[in-house]
Image (cartoon, rainbow, N blue to C red; front, side, top):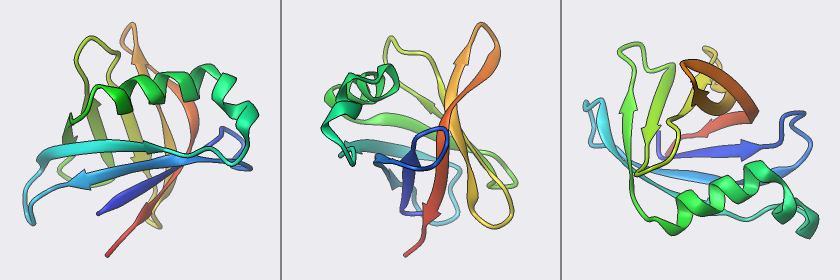
Length: 112
C-alpha cells in the first residue's frame, strides 16, 4: 500500500491522500497527508480542517493490522485516526474518540 485516497462520507468528493512509507513485510511505518479537496468550500469542513492540521505537523506513525485490512494513525496531540478496508480495498476512515470509531469519510487504496 503506497497511498490511500480520502473522500467525503458519501464518497462524492475527493479530499486528499495519505502517503504511506511502509517497508515491505513491516506492519509499522510512517505517513504524510496531502490534502487537495475537489472544491474550495471543503476547506471549511471540520474533517478537512482536521486533516490539514495532520498535514502541517508532518509525519505520523502508521500501524497496520495483521490481516492488513485496517490501520491506525497516531499523531502528536490528535485523536487516533483509523482506516478500515474490505477485501476489495474499499473502506472508510475516521477518528477514535472516547474509545469509539467515528466515521468521517470513505477510503480506497492505491497500490504501486
